[in-house]
Image 1 (cartoon, rainbow, N blue to C red):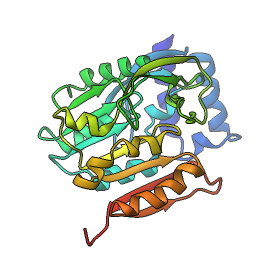
Image 2 (tube, rainbow, N blue to C red):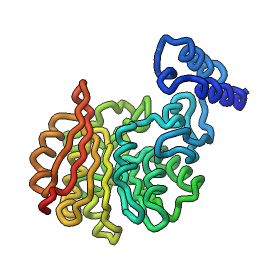
Image 3 (cartoon, rainbow, N blue to C red):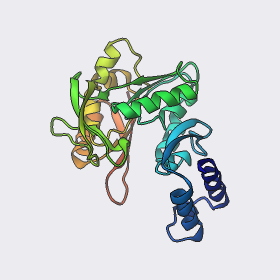
Length: 278
């Protein structure tokens, strides 16, 4: 029954226009929802991402809840940025990697000579991430770092897990709270990116950050590599205090900032590049 449900779900989606599956009241959308609810049991199943920068990569996704990952619809703007910026041979850090929806295509983009360091503190998500790396035969270019990037090398640090979605989890310490997480609080390893590089790991040419509210602390813990190595930064910013701090701090480190601000104001995306005269 499960296999038939997945086949029928894929057949319906492929017959719909690109946007119709996201429209609530069309006949196609109603059929799609019925198929998800009635024929596709909630379970993790191996699928290949259908489009976007992760197209063709294998992931074991919780369906129907993670259908948007299967379809390749997750954060298309970030997908476009990564596709345009990454180069063969680069080192990239994916901070808040979840199950690797960006880390895996990043690794494909940088090629065999490049490396991706995928930081993911949630133990369940880190386990899934390792499974995806292995299934896609990328152990030679993706290293999973089961830790939360933070302002200092903190040993154990409180982390609030996402309840509705594990991707919503984040560090809950020093006045920082993940914006959507409401799950259990656990202790995870905390490390600054400067300390990580000091351990002998290569500094990145690209730094992608999505940590649900702790982004300022991640950057503060990377001050050395940012001022010295000048990586390109793609960051999702979740609250006003972080945005204001970055607006002051990053230019002092020699960066030019481009913001993409939605109608609801947050979360917003920041692309920070080394200023041309640096």
